[in-house]
Amino acid sequence: MANGIDKKALFKFKSEPYLKPISDLGVGFYNLDENTAILRFQLSNTKGPLLIHENNLTAYAYFESTNGSVSDVIELEIEDSHQGIVTITVDKEFLQASTSTSVTGQVYIAVNNVDGNPEYNEVAVFREFTFEVADALINKISAFTKIEYIRMFDQLKMRIEQKVRDIEEAIANGADYVAEMKSVLPQGVETLNTIVADGKSDIQAYIAQAKTDLTNVKDDATEDITTVANNAKSSVQDTASTAVNSINLSTTEATEHVDAKVTEFNQTVEDNGFLSPQILDEELGNLNWQKHKLTNDDGTYPTIALGSNLDNLYALAPGNYYTTSTPITGVSSTAGFTRIELREGTVKHITFRPYNSTQIWLKRFYNNWSEWERVDNTQSDTGWVPFNLINGSSSNTEYDGKGGFKCAYRTVINGTVTTNYIRLNGRNITDGQTIAQIPSAMVKNAQTFPVRTPTNKPVVFITIYTDGSIALLVNKSTSTNEWGPTDYIYGEFSWTN
Image 1 (tube, rainbow, N blue to C red):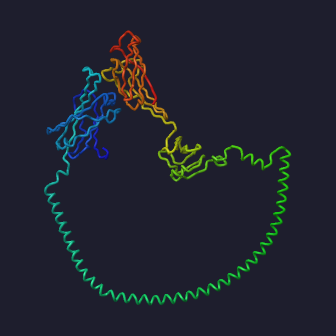
Image 2 (image 1 turned 45 degrees about the vertical axis):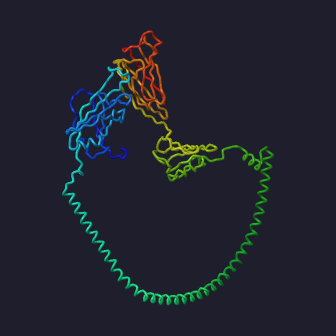
Image 3 (image 1 turned 135 degrees about the vertical axis):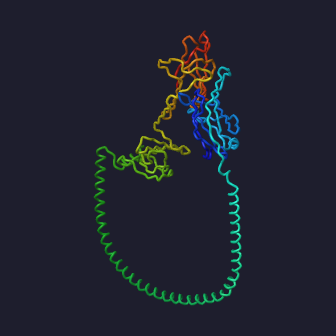
């Protein structure tokens, strides 16, 4: 359910011929459950979970209550084709009709007969299972309790009405308070006016005295400051004149000495065939060489605190950095080595390597910034997943006891490369027949391969379609012998997505 309040019960079924119900798992639902009473079934045999797909089988369920209520024959949804898990949501109307009873259910699996031949019909009936349907507590409130609730609300009503009467009485008394306040108001206004007038007179007297005192202080301070300033000015002027005379003498002597040394150096360089410093600076400026610093002078990376802010990251100039609080999630650490690469124009790459792992992450810009992508080599392998041929074909008939493999598929992801494998082993197959079904995600493009057959029989091909179905095609022009039900196929094939 999208709201996340579904109640799921899991039953595990095995395809075996024993007429006995599964153990009581204590599963129960209520008659007010709506779209939340979910039953999940894991279908398996002695080899493990059945590989199921809507293209090769249909699953049904049927329920019957001890009070005689029955459900429709309901088709189950395939939840996990690799683990053989199917689900059904029990109908609300059936739950209500089955209140306070025990419900018995049964699951049926029918293999789709693509060729329509009666001898290929296959139906499996799994063991019965039971669950209880209880009456929700809210339906059991007694008449006495309901009367108590009514009395409680009636008493509450009386209390509210009394509160309203009290408020109305208080409002009526308020009129007398207002009249009394109006009689007192003129006296209060007169008293306040007297206090304000006296306060203004006192404040004005204080202001006049303060002005007189400040004027006297200002005059005395001005006289003192003028005297000190004149004395300081005379002292500074005397000292400055002495210093300027000394500096002028030293500067003249130093300039003459430097000019002589420069003239001597330039003459020496030109006499020995080298450029003068002025010409050398000009020539170096015209050379096309890398002038942007990519590291510190000692080769280390400058440390930049980004504060988990993408704008701070995007503003970094080309170069190498050690960044902290890098704005990225899912990494072993947000501190590490960051490289900024920029093409002349709008293309920009940011590479981040956490200091404590071998992870490598990349962010790309071309008109817009991409999300972080992990680009270091990652690998996963499903291992060989066994399956059986369908539509009447016999599985795993060849090279038994001689190291032959059985029908299975496998997916290996190595970085950005996905490689898929399939093994086929069987017989009793006709031309054009759909012989197997694998997950459609393995096949982005249709694939076809020649397959091993008896040496005196025609060449045979298998074709794997994008829906995961596998068909066998016989090239009848390659042999005079006809293809028959005892002829076999055997081979392993691989392709990349």
